[in-house]
Image (cartoon, rainbow, N blue to C red):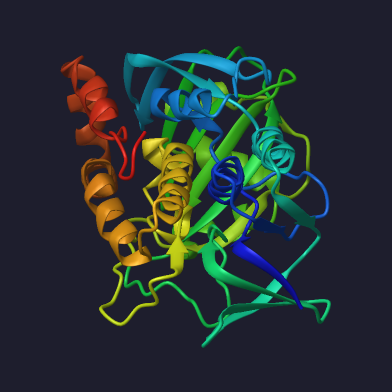
Amino acid sequence: MTDADVVVIGGGVAGAVAALTLARGGRGVTLLEREAAPREKVCGEFLAADATQRLDRLGLSVARLGATPVHRARLACGSRVADVALPFVAWGLPRRVLDEALLMEASTAGATLLRGCLAQAATRDDRGWVVRLADGTALRARHLILATGKHELRGHHRRTAQRRHLGLKVHLRLGVPLEGIALLLCRGGYGGLQPSTGGLANLCVALLPDAAGAAAQDSAALVAHVAAGSALAARLLDGARSVTPKPLAVAGIPYGFRHRDLADADPTLYRVGDQASVIPSLAGDGVAMAVASGTAAARAILAGGTARAFHAAWRRTADRPMRWAGGAALALATMPEFSVAVAARVSTTMGMVARGMRLGETPFGR
């Protein structure tokens, strides 16, 4: 058994940022990443201004990483389309690139990075946390940061009553030019289509499980499912070819979830990223939430705070974008064509909603 001041479980955006911030603050931190090598994740790859600004503060430029700028957004359902210039410059960047850059930054800063390392359980005793790994070894730490994203750690499941969606993702070679991002409503959910790197486009789809059918197992079926939802989707996806036969998939996504720290919760267990709050993917602010929550949790530890104080402050910070995104998701689910028609007629509607879903300043400093 080896010791660390802080163990971070999960090397995605939130976990890597937390480890990076702690290492730069002089803390001994061990970062556990289950994947042995860079790989893609189910993600829209959309980086809004609040995400890129926070990454800039960490010394990471998405432009230098090869991200693709995004200036416009379209929303489509049936024959209706709303088109608007984004009120900020956004970017598209594959998660395998962003995550790897953050992991390298954390390692360079002094964090101990263990790759291909699966945490099976984390338990508390009178000396702190014991994290047991799949290879039979264990780590001991004073503080534990849970950054496992959409996956659960045994014994620490999120308590949520939200409907759980299925997330699906494919990279495509399109037959027509793609300008900006398109939010394409379809049966049982919606898909986001936007430019990625290497001449590809990223299609990331959120569906209720009972609407997925063959789309969950076959990339061509997924493209056809989204294309059937609107005239714009049919045009943009005409002739599209997936680079993989099957989409990446993750099940059980509880959009709208917000962690509520219980009175008897452990003051040294911090949840960040999707373990703290899961914003509907149509908001395009998941990466910003991950960066901000990872930074804030690390700063709370550096300042000698408690997980309870961090979680309470984070809930207040995330309240506005979560409410805006939840309202937009409800409107699109219950009144899809009407919502698109309103957005198309009132040119400021989509810009106002986009601004409302952006994350403001976070607790425990910038």
